[in-house]
Length: 405
Image (cartoon, rainbow, N blue to C red; front, side):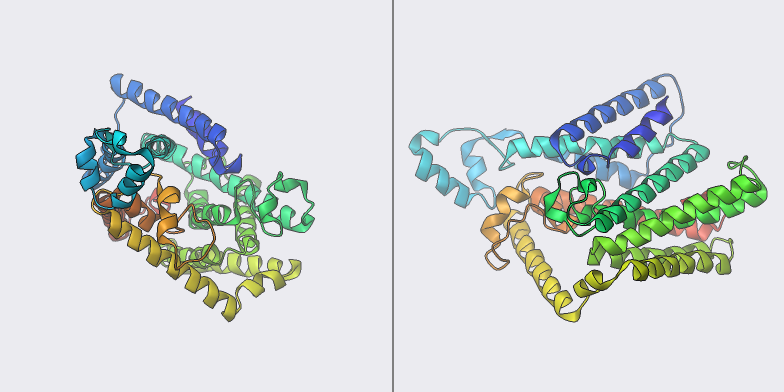
């Protein structure tokens, strides 16, 4: 029951606007609380749980506790002394008058947004902790389900593009006609999911090959069943790569290709055969680009023209520079988790007249909102990830599960 609850959470998360609306997010948060409660019960019953690395524990403690500290009311004089509050204090004095003095105020400039953002961390936190409680075979099943889900998202995205502006598959999302969005709010969110899934799919293809030879977790994967499973996984990968092209997300496409290249290098080192790793990755790229050429690449190539890339690059750099100014302004405490949309307008005079509710750079945005605490959490998680990856590569284990790790 515990495992299938986790599968339901992961599979359901993207199905309505990628969980990026209040009601679906509330449902995900309730499911996350149920998962965390189930984990606590398992622990109370003596079910072993692998310890988290210390760096990860420290990072999670920062991410969970610091936004709560940002909600603690401070005396008015303390709040006014915080970096980045002078303009807001002047507005309070101008509109509220002297009677506003003496009120307690939180570090977060928008406490309601910070509470919302803190609760939104529950689903990924619960998923991360729950996955560590799974057996290797259950992890493989979960990844296979995610692969099929990503393939279906790719198929929906392609049908959206093929159906044109009047396609019912856009589900009333009129802001993204002409590009693939799947069930997400916009093309960039879909592209991020697809790009992150591709390396996992490559690992699954090679994992199936290895386990098909030796038996084990894919104990039913023999003969026609094995061929069918490989075909489903490879078809999902091809749909993912093809749909990525038609999201027209330049960063999504670029990082997907980088991810494929890194996967090819790492998997070739894992004693599965350099030729096979290159064959899988090369086959995916060739199949995806060939199908894209048949469907029509003209609109995609227009976004890849040097002029378009230069304008887009200049716009993003200006956005990042303005975000960095905001981050410095609010150091060391930050403006409050999930307050970027509220505080950024006064920093964007060099960016343009558009409304930016996200920085399009999660690292910079977290530093704006949580200050040095967010920067420390990022550094700890990257260090933990790098250390674990180095350990796995050096191990060079014959265990097939190491491929997926």
